[in-house]
Image (cartoon, rainbow over all chains, first blue to last red; front, side, top):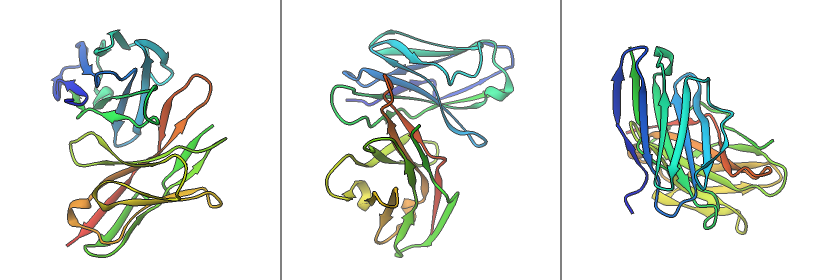
Length: 115
Length: 115
C-alpha cells in the first residue's frame, strides 16, 4: 500500500483565499483524522471520521474550517477565507478500528503558508 | 480524561551513549501507549506500542520502551544513540472514552544526538 497520501505538499496563498487540502487514507482503514501542527500549539486534532461520518469536530478552530469525507478513499479540509494564523502543517492520518490496536498512519503533511 | 506528559522539551545525548525520552500517562482503565517519531519535514512514524504483556516493548530502529504501571511511565530508550536518531519524538495514549477512538499526543521531545 502507498500509505496515506496528501496533497498539495506545499501551498502558499494570500489572506482571504480559499484553501483545500486533500487526503487519501490507507485502503481498508475506517478512521480518518486531520491534525494541525505549529510551533506554538504543537499537534492538534481538528476532526476525525469513522466510516465517512464526522465523529468529533471539537478541535476545528472556527467556522472558516470545514472537512468532508464523501467516500472511504477521500477527504478534504477546507479553509475559507484563509488567514495568516492558519499557517501550519496539516496532517492526515488513518487507522483501522477493526484490526490493529489504534495506531495511526500519517501522511507527509501539507505545509500551508498564508501571506 | 486520558493524557500524556513529556516533561522534557529537548534531550541532548552524545552518539554512542544510551538515551531515554520520558513519558508519563494518566488513564482510566488499561492504557494503550504509543511512541512516534517525526523527522524534519516528514509525517509522524509509528515506532512501538504497549497494549498488554511484557513490560519491555521493542520497536523500530533499535528503540524500546518500558511500561511501568506503578510509576505510570512509558519511557523510550535506546542503548546506543546515533546521529540519525535526531528527531522529534511523541508519546501518545489511546482514548477509549465512549465512541471515541483517537490518540492523545504529548507535546513532543526533541532529541539531539551530537557526533
